[in-house]
Image 1 (cartoon, one colour):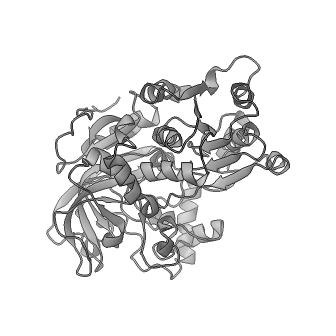
Image 2: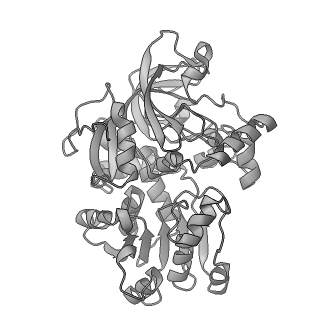
Image 3: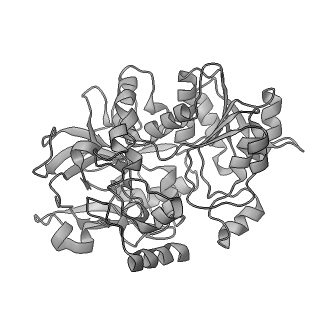
Amino acid sequence: MATSQAANVVEKAVGHDDNAITEQDVSNPARDRAKYADPSGEKMKALAWMGKGDVQVLEVPKPAVIEPRDVILKVTGSTMCGSDLHLYHGAIVELQKGDILGHEFCGHVDSMGSDVKGLKEGDRVVASFQIACGDCMYCKKKLSSQCERTNSNTIENAMYGGRTAGMFGYSHFTGGFAGGQAEYVRVPYGDVNLLKLPDDVPDEKGLYLSDVLATSWNCVVDTGVKEGDVVAIWGAGPVGEMAAEMSFTNGAKRVILIDGGAGAWRLDFVKSKLPKVETLDYSNLPRGQSVTSMLKEMEHGGPDVALECVAGEYAKGWAHYFEILLGAETDTSEIVNEMITSVKNFGRCGITGVYVGYTNHFNIGSLMERGVRLIGNGQAPVHMYWEKLLQMIREGKTDPYIMLTHRVKVEEMDEVYKVFDKRGDGMQKIFVQTRFSDPPAEGTPALKTYKKLE
């Protein structure tokens, strides 16, 4: 928390760069009602970050169109991602009290600016989690997550040597845009960042084009999973689960899924959906064995490919726990080191879980001496993949329903965060309904209500 607040102070003192062509730091319309709130005075429910481990459902103004290519979306579905927990835990810098969260959402076009093309009121669409301009060097290559003109944050540029695109509901480090765990959301460059959904794809499938499907697909194809590969995946959450399905789609002959501790139940859950998956519980290993040694027993030389679908904030040992706690590092290297030592010589390791800064004790020797390829998969460029993935959904080649376990109300999201954070109630992937949502699609979970936890 102290780091996050310090970053806010530094950013304010230094100031943003001048590269962004869309308004920055519009993380809640209530911050400047005269400028950012809809003139109708309509209110909405929205889930806001209020401090470390504290999110609250607030009543705030409906957002206004403030730029000519804005679209105001009436949200019919959103969800929660494991990366939202990094915000909840205060692991991402430059959060501010009252920031509206949520980067995955779909809905209907409610209103739009005068320069929006190709959309009309009432259109049913899904948003990409990143905000792209459509015209810069990266956008022209469909590398939408790296847009040069939607995030002017100075600290990110200094830390990384470049910036990502602006992102919905993901702190002022990525532009400070209000997110979609709400009843309405403003989408800058709406004609770039919204994809129309056909009638035969319900919200409970189309919603996940916003992030998790593109992120899983990018993890698999960017790391080069190919015919005959043996793939090990760290993390049995939604991204790990869909990466397993998509690894088989790309020809993997074996997929080994690794998880444990409070999330160990997810191994059985995923296997019930994808019976070909093999599992490894790191919290229940035979005496004297490690994840690396077990993988080398399961496959001569180890897997060809390792995919990281967890994140860097979860330390397994005391050394990294205290180093993160004391600010000596921001991310643990433990999982990345396991991947490097587990794969075959000249094997490939892809990192998709969120890592935000610096790490200690990195096994660079194994990486170099054994020719291991370490690939930062980056924030997935949704625009590169979402049309292909939509077609895969329509053809039955990928099925988001295999990860969907819960349907909840946006009004109860503060309680849902507590359950999700504890890996509780068998919660894998949720669908968040609003007052604008359709009834549950056939084959999807019924609404579950969460009462206030003591």
